[in-house]
Image (spheres, rainbow, N blue to C red):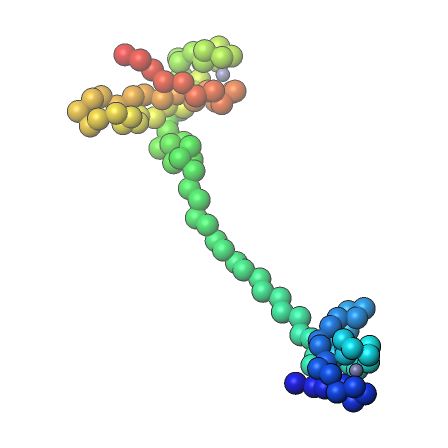
Length: 108
Ligand SMILES: [Zn+2]
Ligand SMILES: [Zn+2]
């Protein structure tokens, strides 16, 4: 704790134009603070392993011909099976158009 040499009041730390100073609140006396300001830069690296569902699906997907896309009428699509409801029900077959990327499912 530092005190003002003029009026013996407590000096308060204050920043003046980016410089840390000790300023007397009573008479306005100020002196440069001996305390040096250190800039702390904390860089956080957070790696999130985000695996998109669509990527997983496409990885196991097979390319098939003869399936007509309801969107652009292209006859080539990727298809994959997916268990959507309970395990005792048959897996739903999904298609993804190779041309316009539309995804649709097949109802049997
Ligand atoms: Zn003072
Ligand atoms: Zn299409």
